[in-house]
Every structure is written in C-alpha cells, then in structure tokens.
Image (cartoon, rainbow, N blue to C red; front, side, top):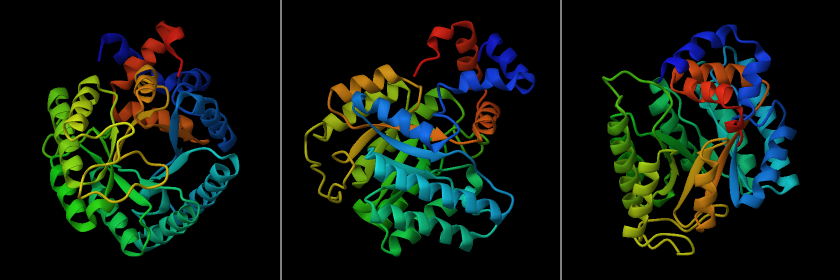
Length: 324
C-alpha cells in the first residue's frame, strides 16, 4: 500500500459520511433491496448472474437475527418476482452462530428451505477463523437434512484449506459446492499465508484440488495470475463453456450453475475482465451487497484489509475510475 493509501486509511474515520458513501457507490448496490434489484437488472445484459448479500454480521443479540431472517425472506421473494438470476449469501454470525449455535442453524435452515423451494442456491459466507469449522459443519448438517442447495466459501490463505477441501469432498462427494477466494480476513501468519505470491499459489492449488475432487468450483478472484491459471486448469481437464462437465466424480449440473465451475467477482471490481470471460462463454457471477449497514461494511473492510485504501485513494484522485 502506498503513502497515499495510508493517509486515506488514517483519514477515513473522520471523513464525512457522504464522501465514504460516494466511494462505496462502486462496491455496494445501495441501502435498500430495491437498489440491489435495480443493479442486477441493469447488469443482466452483460451476461452476468448474481449473489445477493444483506450487509451485516456478528450480531450481539438473537433479536437482531430476526432482521436478517425477514430480510432474506424478502430477498428470495424479490428474486423470484423480478426474475433475476441470483443466489443468496448468508453470514452465519448474522444469524447468531456465536451466541446460540442451535438457533443459528434453525434460522439458516428456514432461509435455505425457502430458497430450495424456489430453486435458489444458498452460499454460507466464510468469516474469520473463529467460525471456519462451524460454517463447514452447518453446510454438512443442512445437506444431511436433505437441503442440497447449500455450499460454503473457503479462504485459500488459510493453511487448513487443503484439508477442508478433502473433508468436504469425502463427506459430500460431488454435492460439495465451494467458492474459493483468498479471503479478506487478515489472519495470523501462524495459521495463514500472508505474502501475495504464497496466497496466489495456495489459491491455484485449491482450484486444482476442488476440480479434481468433483466439487462445483466457484473461482472468486480478481487476481489475473489466478484467473489465467484457472483457465488453464479447466482446459487441462477438458472443461469449459458449452461443455458438459466431464468429471466422473461430479454431481449432475444444478439449475443456475455452470458446467462444474464459474467465475465470481465483487461488484465494481474487474468488470472488464468479467465481461471478457462472459463473452467467451464462461458463467460469471457478481456479488451484490446491499443494506443500511453499508457504512459499517465499508469501514470494516478497510480495517481488515488496508490495501483497500488504495482503491479509495484512486477513486478520490481519479474520480473517473469510480465506475462499476
């Protein structure tokens, strides 16, 4: 991170909220569900599908979980009524995981059941290392209860990710569905890679392992070396646009999914690369966050990953770059 990025990061806590909102406009759909629907509808012509995320995490009381249960019910209804091609993403701590595990599972099951009734996939987002195992366990629990429309995220920077891939594949077989990303949570170097090239190498290895395990592989990366490697890994396995998944250990394709894989990117990031991949026929998905907690989301991401400050600095110095 450059000097300007450090300055911006230091200034953010005292920066007027309207300026933070202007920067966040690129990365957050807006405060309301209707904002997210509008953004998705406007991007459908780009060949994209979507994952809808209600901003907020780690509640302090179970009463707060009701907001997320109700809001995701509204989100599922809106996806269906508006006819957008979208999944939903849930953060387990927003449903009470760190307060009452049983209640959190109950809340997550409610949403997952409703999503299943409407052929909508549910992605359990991965948070920091306190809940890594719990999040994986919930996915397995949901699938054991007959809800196969659920998968999770694994963070390649964690040393344990290779073992987690093997565990999911051995437990769920071809029903394992994983979004692999490097992870935004900056974990200790005792449990995670901290250098860029090591994280890239770990992500590439994870892509190989997921593909070979027969898992549905959602490649969530903005790093060109990872994207290029993934394209080569797919070609090596004779996987690609318009080709039925040839892997014998993979499950049958699911509605709304690609042929065993897809590429995923955050709203406002690498739109040019995403559109190029879509034009080549790859299934591409955009992560669409929305909600009244956009400010907390923006500030939390900045604290967790100071490199984001460079994007903020660039948006201020070169405002024409603040486009999705």
